[in-house]
Length: 402
View 1: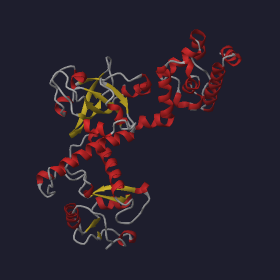
View 2 (view 1 turned 180 degrees about the horizontal axis):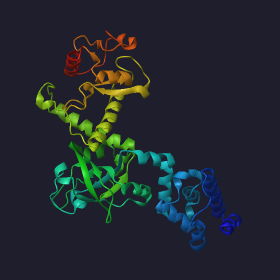
View 3 (view 1 turned 45 degrees about the vertical axis):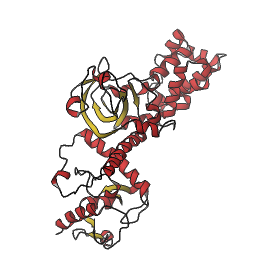
View 4 (view 1 turned 90 degrees about the vertical axis):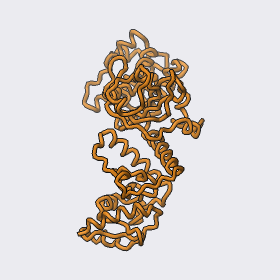
């Protein structure tokens, strides 16, 4: 090993000099972690293949321990410093990794929905006639496309199972046509042949497609890149892009409801039904919709708690007046929402605080003892919200009064 390091340090090639400094940094990191400061197979492979070949292979395979080192002292950084020495796919992979960054790689691993798949039912299942429904998809083996080289860092996630948004091609193929963003799917671990079993599925009542692509054409967003791929493909997707896509689904459903003049009565049994069979996947989707709902409220309302006036964004939450756990068609409209401080939100959901629909004033249950909350009685709420929603919440509040 010392001979290889000496050769790199003494080389007339500045790239090899920089590579020696990268290796020195790696060894320092390992010593700091209490590990043996070795370089594994790197010296052997450099002797056999040369520095350029080793760096290229490691970057394409994302196997250089990138998350453990300073990104500025990594194989990826060397590729971008000496771009004339490397092929285009190696440069693209290095750019993607450094753009993502070590912290974002770790953040990506913690995301609930991590991938976006654009395909067709025929390409996924290898047969015609598989309808887009939970009953038809769950239990089937689906073919997962190859990740592009610049996204190979995400391959390790696929082998453990994953959640993904699925977009079905809208171009007709073999007599079938998709409708765009169709579902959130829970896939089991990736098997040989790149097949994965579908464990659960949540399909959107109102998929979004061409109209969304047109709205984001050439704006540089993730959505703008979806249309460029005409073949089956999978991408890792950032949390912010998941939110954008789910917000688009939500907004389309609301527009259609307004066009059809839907105004259901929450007291009617058919419009209000407890969701008691919520699976883990559905809970994920509900949480993501909650995030989108909060952002929509922040965009529409004054950025403060509707009851206390608190303006600290970190403690503001989106409260559904008719809870999201109720299967009510209007539950995710902004008129059914309030921005509330987190502690007020808990009391509101527990029906210990409510808003009188006639006076628009705050009422507090006698079961609440803290003067901090009792002092809110009679406070006027200015937010424009649905009278039907307030009436429903207040009715429950009154029933629970001691």
